[in-house]
Length: 332
Length: 302
Image 1 (cartoon, chains in turn purple, yellow):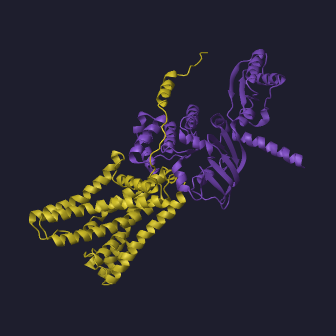
Image 2 (cartoon, rainbow over the protein chains, first blue to last red):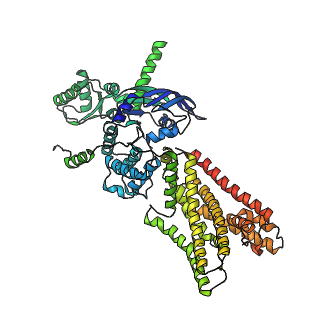
Image 3 (cartoon, one colour):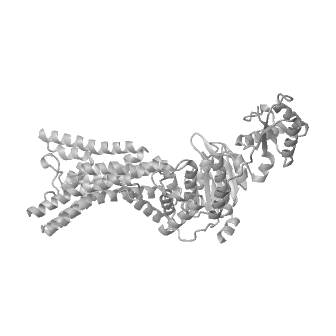
């Protein structure tokens, strides 16, 4: 527990105008961001520079300019020391199919410097914590995607790091597996006391898991704020209603009635998927759910579904684009 | 519509198990050198299928047996017939058994490196304290050691057998030592060539085919050319041609410096001057293999 208090005191990751330029692309462009302890989401579209940032943080790829520190260690000079204290879960498949999870994770624990006995004990513990039980003695080739993701997570945690870097851990998982993985990520911090940097291109799932979200686009920092700031602006409800004889176009009737009650309903033309049949509305707290229920009941429509929409990162970009346009407008 | 209750049993079960609690690790972290040793021993064991599936043990173990059986037979014959010397020199044994050695390199070099590339395990290694050089050295040393075990074990059988047959102790010990030096050099050379070829492709099949092709075609071509040179009486060319295949290279080194009789046509081995070139080429090739592997893995990285 002593270690946890130490971790609370330091900045886990700090970058200062960090840039990485390849001959043809700029992967990171003067990125300055501080990440504290806890679960931090790193959000960006594909090619936004997330993986490049992780490589630099592990001390595997030198930055073109600027500097970065992980756990107070300079990435340019202390790469090996950083990698001893940090766990990494890659985005892609990285497991040999012909060995068992136990053998593989024991080997990876030893590669992190754990003595043989400790490596075996930690492997058994870690696999249990990520939710792999009897199947851990079977070859990995026969595992489901969800189980493979757990093995990948276990090899990142087995040496009890102070920080884990998780690259798209929910990739390829079904909704249930996704929720389980997100719950596990939350526990890595709350129960294990390990700080987490998790990347995703889905803002919605990070909102529920992270304390802090950093959004990057085109290698630039777009936004860095506590998750609560995001939640206030981005909770969107999707509802779908039936048509009745009285209201042949139930969707339109509901939209008009909701607008009349002062609920902001996004236009069908907003370009979001399914906006034609599904009403998307911005929820202002718990009351909105009641309003929807009352409106639909008053109209006598059937409510087919009402769900919180997972946000795509493009919406954040959409917002910031608008803000940028506004700023430009004011400037001219 | 019935309300679906979440199934409570498994989640309750999981909660109970998870509640054992997380224990942090305060023990020693042994760092880079230890990690490199761990990778070495894992790769060396893997080269004989240990710690892997039963299926992957079959071929290396079989080849090991095939390497040792002729030695055992020779010893049995020598003991039974009370021969004055062994039917085959220590240094000659590996040359005669080169097909088995080539097959072993072809099967195990891709196993060692192509698997890591194919299943993208390499990034996991480099996300740990080791560096590129540690990975390359561990893999190189592991395959060379595995080959040394494969080639030195039959020599040991011969040596023990020769002593049992009460052959001359000094003679046999000298031959055995020369044989060991020769197979050590052969192990390094073959391991380097095999790994360089295998590290190019993540496909194991291609790796196997390419290693066999390089080792056997070069030997076939070189010995054919040597035979032609011999038939035409241009014996001076024979040693120089021998530089171009790994097997004849080793043969040349040992016939110049390790008291072996050359396996080249007409038994014409390199002179001492030519032998020095052989040694330089051999060591140069080993160094080049190491350099190429380093370059390859600098690129692979994460």
